[in-house]
Length: 181
Image: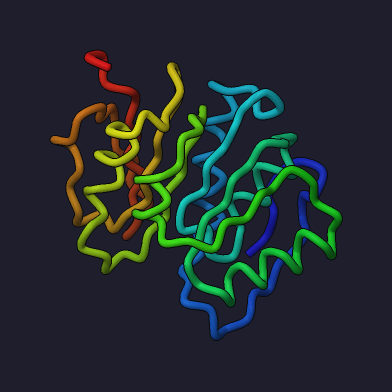
């Protein structure tokens, strides 16, 4: 896993093998950041990284100038790993939360311009992520929610759906705040 842009570009991060993660591939991550880079000024965005795992996405945002990043994961090993990377590379702007993502979404009050969720692919509650984000008003106006999921999972019928981009066995589904909110 490597950082593909910004001040930390080229750094390889080798997370411990015992972490329960499936990092976003470099190809998919590069495509995602190309899409987001053309729509958002990262330096002025607040970012929420759900199921942050290795911190790959949060660190990529920080490398590209985002300084208001909230990263959430319930696995202690993941939180410990991300903390060690933050310390080792003196990364600023990432606030870590060790929490169950669904409980976090129910209780958290801040809104974000970019919300990225990369849940375990076998998680049956993936479709609830967008519902909770919208129900609790966590997405800012003109913001985007991106859910990474297995390509065979269909999220097109959910409120706020805009598009799905496929990258092999993985897909990114994009949501915007539904207009009735």
